[in-house]
Amino acid sequence: MSENAPEEKLSYEQAREQLVEVVRQLESGHVPLSESMALWERGEKLAAQCQAWLDGAKAKIDAARSSADA
View 1: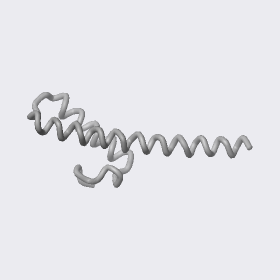
View 2 (view 1 turned 180 degrees about the vertical axis):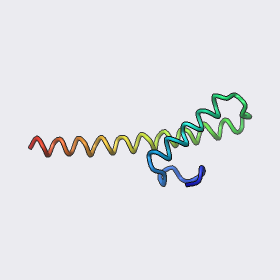
View 3 (view 1 turned 45 degrees about the vertical axis):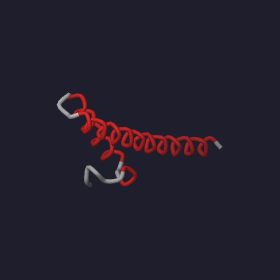
View 4 (view 1 turned 135 degrees about the vertical axis):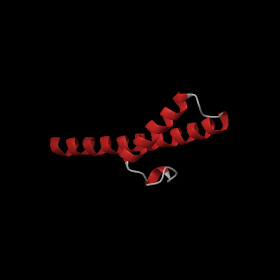
């Protein structure tokens, strides 16, 4: 899937991989300020999507545990 695909269309693994690449580029220090700002914004969206995937997985686990305890 494209690097510019909407975050909600990415799997957790794809979003995480793209987030790692964004961080690598930002940490390199070789990106102009305007591009750094765009990368930062993309990274924020990717991080939020990764967190949503993790929250969803946790909710499923919690629900499974609750029904197993009942």
